[in-house]
Image (cartoon, rainbow, N blue to C red; front, side):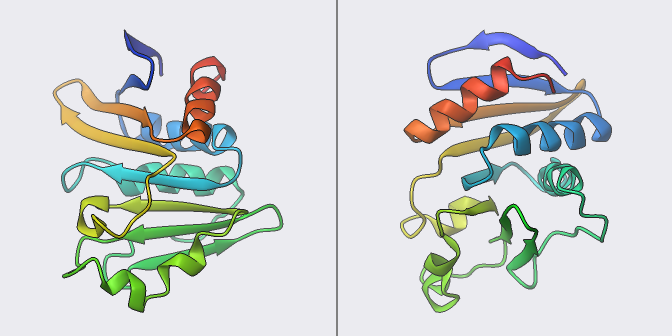
Length: 164
């Protein structure tokens, strides 16, 4: 899993060849995410968003089933080190529904929030620390990371210099 040559000040691109590489990147993301923050995951159905989250959760030692929370909207994973919340907003009809869900309560400083389909929460969601876009292509999946905050800049730096 090597970064592609294209990198600018606020973004970085990787090519992930298969599902195993996507899961490995999820583990790498956990090490670089500093344990908390807001990360959005965009891309079409089947692009690997939940696979990436599964890899991240496996890196915490979680061995249970990891499925997309399409119907429940959020799945919680608690450990001694952190709280991880996996959101899937695909079925959200209106961004205001996030208020009724108590979304802001999840945005604790010690929590890591991973949000699939963030465009469904446009106007309600705060700026993410890190935006991840997965795009299927003939070679596998193109993964683009963009920093949205200073913390996101630090995450990008860790992702670039770390060993995935």
